[in-house]
Image (cartoon, rainbow, N blue to C red):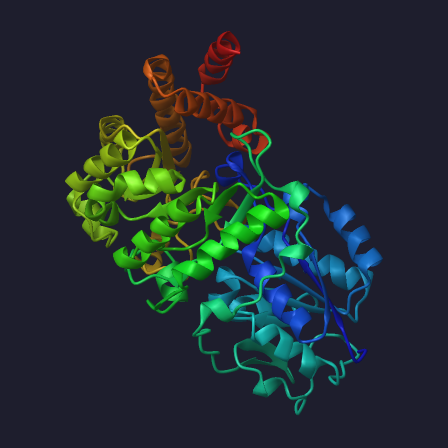
Amino acid sequence: MPQKPKLLLITPPYHAGVVEAAGSWPHIGFVYVAGHVRAAGFDVEIYDAMTKGHTIQQIKERITLSNPDIVGSTAYTSSINDAMEVLRTAKEVNPQIITLIGGIHANFCYEELLRGYPETLDIVVRGEGEVTVPELMEVLVGVPRLADGRDFPSDTGLSKVLGIVYREDRKVRVNPPRPFVEDLDSLIPAWDLVDWADYSFYVMPGSRLGIVNSSRGCVNECSFCSQQKFWHRSYRERKPEKFVEELEYLRDTYRVNVVMLSDEYATRNGERWEKILDLMIERQTGVYLLLETCVGDIIRDADIMWKYKKAGVLHIYVGVEATSQDKLDHFKKNIACEHSREAIRLINEAGMLTECSFVLGMPDDEPGHIEETLALAKHYNPDFAHFLLIAPWPYADIYDELKEHVEEKDYSKYNFVEPVVRPKNMTMEEISRAVIDCYRRYYMDKIKEYDTIRDEFKRDYLLRSMKVMMENSFLVRHLTGMGDIPDEVRKYLEQKN
């Protein structure tokens, strides 16, 4: 390998539909890793094959043109198959390319991947990669490869790199974990390596959508989630001033006017969060924020919802998940059922957009429960409701409880829109059709309210959102059974255009 190996970071070309209906944004993990790799003196490129909608053939051509020494990808569970296909393609271009994988799935399922893809995958990067990847590249400069390309020999120096897993002399070697970065403000984002023309918030024509991190970690215990396990229930924060300065930098340098917060729990520290809002108001950042937070924090901040609005918070997702307190307790959501309606009311009354989700497809689900879920969704009345099918990731706390009911083994379907678990009293097709029916009935009622909305911005936002939902090919692919919604919605939208 040359003294200064080149790294090509590639997003897997996986498309699920629900998230992509809203917009496209950079892969923030790659932005940080690339910044630290470059600061260490190495050449690095970011290639967002997913957002570009590229095929494996196009990815192959890009790898050939880039001629990297190392190719890295990342994956959550439903995108892992596509990520491995990217790495297989890299080996096809040049068997001597060293391949890396990071992300939530690989963090926990490293042994399955290294044993299952011996000719495709070389190294798993666990945890945060900003320090690990540059250090790994330094070591790889002098590392020889075996003729079959499968294993590293011993005594390469790889054993000293914290946070990696690899094969060495026919064994999977798991190095000790790397401690988390203590000072998040010390991280180096490579925003100039982003192809900004690719990113926009679809419901705001002409917008440029960025993604920024103001904290990392989660201290909650949600049993179906993976973030609290990935972060070991830790939590770190950036200084409010540094976060707002980054918003201003992206606005002034790349014309970013909408920003999604990648934080798992941005509002946990109420004093810090209010300071962020105050700074955004004081500096008139002019940047809209999209964020996810907890019901309890909205209740806590009832008296400063006006600050949310004035600062530029546009759209808030709150996790509701279930229709009963028993179900919420089962999911370890740590909220009271009656608080969800109040939180959504507070956000709506302050003039912001609300979004929440309801988890279905558990073993005990039956038609009556699904009807209750739809009724509660209508009672809560968020602007956007998602009826998601449980995806029991093999590393989530809830997996052991659900594994005997898991009928779908293809990870690419673990995307919340395709059934994986079969309820005891319903078929897979029945639960899928029931969820589709929830969408159809919810939005057919919801769209009739649009004429009563006095706020012109919000009304137009909702209309454009519905249009985007109906026109996004990946979402439509999963909702092809929505009956008469598409035609009726299109007719309504055509009348409004």
